[in-house]
Image 1 (cartoon, rainbow, N blue to C red):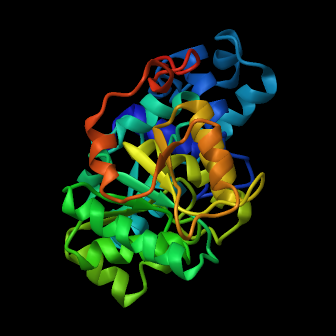
Image 2: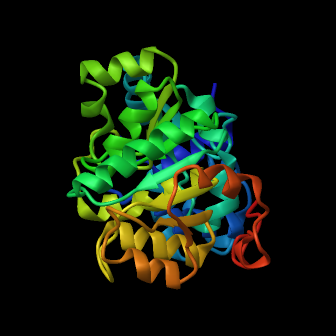
Length: 314
């Protein structure tokens, strides 16, 4: 049974039961929480009540409209639950609190997940890189997946073609735990027999901040990148383009936001942007065995979180 805070959060943010009223973005949601307190307190309030609490008239009307979706949302959530997809908010025990700690107001207020939910809170090694990785880069990605298993941590990636799938498949085949953050439809992904077997095995969880039936988009791929970093203790960029592309933008954003420690592969198979990431402060590695040393070491003062904006919001 969802708490009032969890129910209100889903109604305000989720896109799974759209009625024409635009749901709040993560930033809008967290600002609302900062302005009015716990989201559950909004249930039953009128637009006049909300304006008296300090909300602008247009936002007050929007919030009331979103909260009125309770019946349609209940049916939508039930369908997802029956398909094996859980809907988590920061007010649910299964929500990975490291997202709030690392991302602050950029943390997703709603997360859809299927599989071994407990893995989301355990951290691990993230592996990211180009879809069109070279043969040598592909070998590095797979080696990183196997190394994560050998040091008994989860492998975290984006489930995309190329580096992501190579690392995830290698970790799973080696008997390890795998966390995938796809930018494409979670519902469609779960229809694949290989994915269903992995989920049933209890060593895999897939999660997304987007509606489970949302198709792939470049924007979603860029947006989900921060989750890979925030769920990880260290993330390795295997092959990045220089100055553009998802791997470059994700790594530079993660270093700037201090979402986790960011490492970069410096060796055969590296991308044209890897040297630049090294120069910007990413931890250079040239042997997969170095992962253990990074995990065992303490972050420097510059790597520590939270940043000034990453304060407790309720």
